[in-house]
Structures are given as structure tokens and as C-alpha cells.
Amino acid sequence: MDREKQYSTPIDVRFSDFDLFGHINSAVYFTYLETARIKLFRDVFHELTAKGVYVVVGKAECEYKLPIVLTDTVVVTLWVSRLGDASFDLSYKIHNNAEKTFALAKTTMVCFDTASNKTIAVPEQLKNLV
Amino acid sequence: MDREKQYSTPIDVRFSDFDLFGHINSAVYFTYLETARIKLFRDVFHELTAKGVYVVVGKAECEYKLPIVLTDTVVVTLWVSRLGDASFDLSYKIHNNAEKTFALAKTTMVCFDTASNKTIAVPEQLKNLV
Amino acid sequence: MDREKQYSTPIDVRFSDFDLFGHINSAVYFTYLETARIKLFRDVFHELTAKGVYVVVGKAECEYKLPIVLTDTVVVTLWVSRLGDASFDLSYKIHNNAEKTFALAKTTMVCFDTASNKTIAVPEQLKNLV
Amino acid sequence: MDREKQYSTPIDVRFSDFDLFGHINSAVYFTYLETARIKLFRDVFHELTAKGVYVVVGKAECEYKLPIVLTDTVVVTLWVSRLGDASFDLSYKIHNNAEKTFALAKTTMVCFDTASNKTIAVPEQLKNLV
Image (cartoon, rainbow over all chains, first blue to last red; front, top):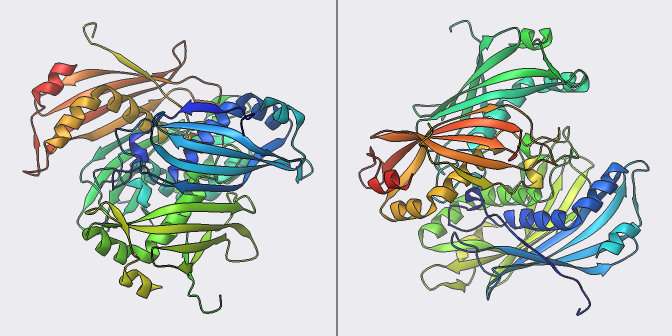
């Protein structure tokens, strides 16, 4: 674990992210994960998309620890927790940059080639990034 | 007005459309307009998109009359209120199929040709539809 | 499995649910789960909320099988796959009412009492419903 | 006009804000207006909400000038363009901090007292802010 590079990105919480109960809607957490993921991989994602390779979510999971309320600061920290040949895992912690952990999450990412319509091996430029 | 054809579509309100105050978020009303508009024009929009013609919103406005709460039924009724050469207006009423009018709205629609990168005259197939 | 009652609800897919690639955004799947869940539990959720008991998502996971595109019909089928004392699991299948399975998902639901600020046992009225 | 104070806020555009055509969805522009408005009025809004006074949108309009694409920077600049007794107008420019103007917009804001269930005069603390 100690060799893993971690990347943090602040989330600009929107008023419309809150539900009737005054909490961030549970589905919106996955939008926050996406925001952090895309910030990290942005350039490589663009390069790959231009070549017809999509990096898509194969599986996603989130464990909710504490509700996020209007006064909370929100940060997503992510790291590559598994780097396989055909897929890789990103792990995430949604927190307030202090003592509060709002959620722990993981997504399994798969690379998909639109020309062959098949999943492909994780490209080197993605492996090198992290 | 009496010659105008009106089209109504029920809206499947989502839990995440509600805000902290228990009301549908004001921006979401425009998503409801879009939903009703796309249902009406769906086939023509697809045909036009396939030809590289996008029908886009040039202007949108909404007057809010009553908040929409969790127990409300929501319907959008729309009609073409102006049909010009270069654009047309859609008018909308968001209501509960009974005495409540939640909002009145209007969008000016413009047809855009992606090949020439210019706005074009409203296609006949759109004019014929309404 | 064969004794489980299953509940299906059609999803009104919105134009804004689609991403740049023409697929339903992966985070939106969780909104579809929520929509189906709330339709099933609506009355009981309201009753419990009125008593200060929130039924919240403790954990959520989704396995993506096939992208959902503009021409797809979307249905969520859900069932209670585990009914414990302190929590219960809902399992979901997102499909097109025919041969396509878009995703399989699960949420662990926890009951939370706002008065004591603690999780509580799953209320009988919820157990009886399913 | 030259005496008006203007307030600018950068918008953290989300991947899910983009539609099938690669443009920010037209309804999402109103979410950007809301984000900018709430940032400016945040403290006063909280104070008023605590007293049972909601500042709500009575009318909203947006004129779309240019599509927003993935590589664009987005900023909302807003100012009070009318300050009446019973309502006030906010005007907005959505732009890229350079030569591109994506949209011009306006919202009429109304103050609503939840105790009396009536609209009330614009509170002094709001008038003083701008």
C-alpha cells in the first residue's frame, strides 16, 4: 500500500446534490468518484478516446459511512489498488480533509476497443500514469 | 389558440429532483420540458440528427407558479406557439392534470446544420408534425 | 430464490442521462435503483420518515454488463435478497424486459432513527411488505 | 449599469453535464446559475432560511449563444440588475473568462415567508449585500 500514489481532488458540491433529508443523494457519490477519476486520467482518456478506446466502469461499489451535509467540505482521494492485464481497480476515499470519512469506494475499470467491439489489455500509457 | 394541437406527457418525478426544501429544484423544470419535447419530436429529431441537423434550444424561459412537492402528480402539456422560417417557439404548461399549474414556460428552437455550421430554415417534416 | 417476490418498474430514461459516448452514465444506474426502490417502499418510507426513521443506503454495488443506448427500453426488477435484524439487502436487475441484462446490483439498507441518532432494527412493517 | 458590483465564480463542469452531442445540456445552465447565486448569497440565504424565509426563483430565462464543449473553461458572472421592493433580478453571463460568451441569463428572485405562507419584501440584509 505504501508505494501507491494517491491523488486528491476537491469536489464542488452543488445545491441540487442534496436530497429532501439535507444529505447528498447516495447516487451522487458515484458522480464525485467520476469527477475525481476523470481529473486524474483526463489527458490519457482523451488520447485513448481519440483512438476508439473507451475506459469504462465494469463494476462500482460504495460503502457509506457518514452523511454529507450542507456545511461539509468534500474531497475525493483515489489510488490504483490493483493493476491487472485486462482491468484495473481504483479505490477512493470521500472525506473532508480532516477527521470525517464519508465513504469508501472502488471501481473496476475495463478498456474497450470500439473498432473490434471487445475489451482489450490495459494500455501502457495508463499503467505508466499511476 | 384554439387551432393549436396540444401534447401532454406525464413526468416520472425522481427522488433526486427534490431539493433540501422538499421542492423540485428550479433547474429540473427545464429537464421536464426537454423530456416532453423529446417525446413529441423523437422520431423527427432522430431523422434530422442522422442528417447532421440538430434542433437546439436558442432561448428558454420559465415562470414558476407553485412549488412541486412529493405528493404531486406532474404533467407537461406543450404546443407550438410560433412557427417561423428560421425558428419556432414551444410553449409549455407544467401542471397536475387538475387545478394546479406549477409553471408556464417557453423555448425558442433553432435548427442547426453541422455540415455548414450554420442555422437553417425549419425543415418541413418538423412543420408538418405539429 | 424461488420464494422471493420480485417487483418490476419501468424507468423513464431522460435525454440528460446519456453521456458523450451515447451511453447512460454509470452513476445514473444508481438513480434508477433508487427510483425502483422508492416506488416499492413508498408508503412505508413515508410512514417511517414521519416517525423520524430514515431507511438509508449503507452500501451499494453495481456490475455493468451492457451499455444502455438511446433505443433501449429500461426496466428495474428488484427483490429482497437478505432480511437481517439490523439491515436488509435489495438485489436488482436492470434489463430491457427481453434478452438484455444491462446490470446487476445490490444495496444494503439500514434503518436509522433520527431521535436517538442510531441505527435500529428493521421495522416489522418493512419486513411484512416484502 | 456601471455602478453595479459583479461577482464571478468558476464552474466545476462535470462529465455528466454533457449530452450525446458533446455539449453541456441546456437545462444544466440553470444549475450553473444556481451555483453562482448560492455562492454569492450563501450566508444570507442560510440566515434567512433559519428564520423561515426562502429566497426562491420566480422566473428564469436563458439565451444560449454558443455551445459549451469538453475543452471549455466555464465562469458565471452575476450582478443585481433590478432591486425592487417585492422582488429583485439577477443577471448572469456564462463565459470562458476570454472572448466566448456561452449564454446570457436572468432570474427574478422572490422572498417567501413560510410562517405566513406569503411573499414578503426583500429583506434589508439582502439589499445591503449587493
